[in-house]
Image (cartoon, rainbow, N blue to C red; front, side, top):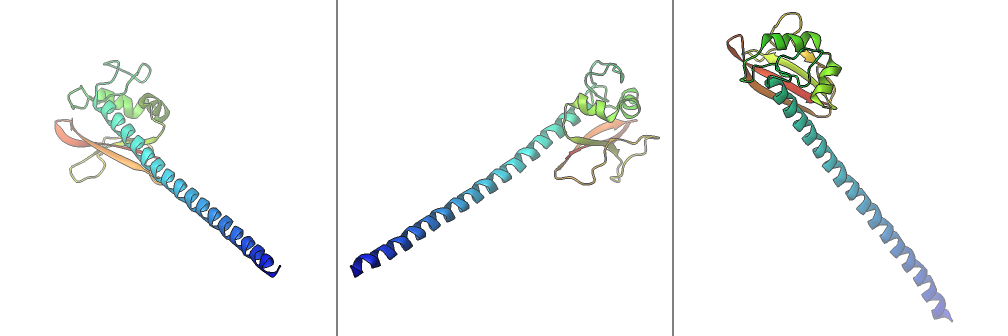
Length: 165
């Protein structure tokens, strides 16, 4: 009888040990599954932000739609003549008459954007009353900056588009 009671105590300990090991491995598995999904999601968001930044920059470097668009009839915002030369009339329409919400809707982006021209020293060009369009990034998780070379008043400058969230 003595042997039977020893075996029963050993069996209870053995069962507790196995249950503890199973719980430990389940917790470790859940932790790594969650960690990997978080990393993939951050990469996906950065990829989406990059695609949106490229789309906004490409739209701006186009002539837009319709060809002589105004803020009241714009379907696609573009500020060049289609050959990387800034059309000052379209630029004025974009800077002064197109609201930020209207621009985001036209660009079809859920992210915030910021647009400006960069001079040869890397600073924001002085264009007059409005030098930029959009919201300047201050606190963000991901920021993508796209630069395109354009001709502004017979001078090569960088058009900068930043998309962020």
